Image (cartoon, rainbow, N blue to C red; front, side):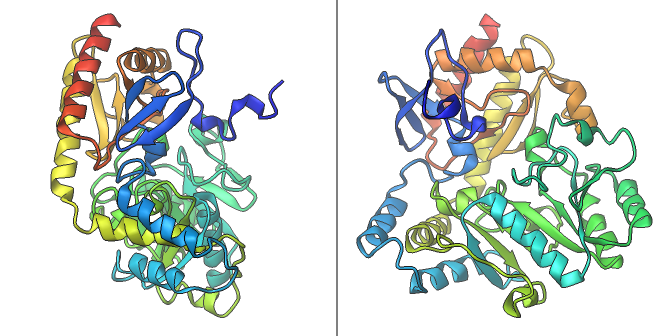
Length: 406
């Protein structure tokens, strides 16, 4: 029996065996993965979206080598931590404060703590079908969970409750039901329910209703941060939060996350009401990665990047449309494929549109043709700046071949 249960430390990263062979990676570079047998693949999982510059991005690698040589864990304050915080604070003019943690789940946990201490209220409302971390309290309402259906009374588990995505009447109903809501936490795109986009008015009105009722707004951008531009994605969708959680892409694959916020929101941090702790938080290695990532992204052509992704989306829709209805939801840098006439607008519609059997078969057929995606109906396709036009052309051809086989 293996000392590592299941052969991996996070089951979300485990891919199914292909023709009886497990999938294990020996090297990741740019937009490509090489497995232990020497086969190379075009990667569209991109470490669940963490490596937006590509795997082993040279500027980030060099910055990290320098940090390692100077000591990755001095244990006390250092200039790199301040420089990285300032770089993050420049991503959104209204969010002038930043603090580091190590994982996205920790970032959401801290943001909820800040909201609770700031408002004196206990309950956080999150979106049904969203993933806002794997801690027990935050795990309520994951895609596929019974409580996400909201078929009965609104659940409250460990001071967490749920809202329906894209449903402003449900936001009003929540605040009519309860006066103890500290914050609403929402993603700029409901990623783990299949990259669902909000209706044009949704975020602006959600913010207005929450503020009218004395609650804060937390934008969970652990997945979406830096995906629509070199900044927070909420500014592109009309969401004006008090706090933003970031992770994944900000460190180009290094284990780092952060909470950004307004000066008013961070008052509870600065006066000690919302305590923080963590030996590894803001260490020189990860803050060097954050600074190098943001510095590099500032010179990138996001318009061309998103356009390449949109063209790939259209190619995939055309290929899969030959075997039945097909469409995509999301943005050019991250999107999901649906075997339906139109993309779902709610979690309930997404559940109805799921084709897990076909999604699983497509994943395996693509791997046979040198393309790696996240399997399952809730999966996403992540683009990076390292993907070349040749990568995208080969991927479109792989979808064409897979569709003919399916």
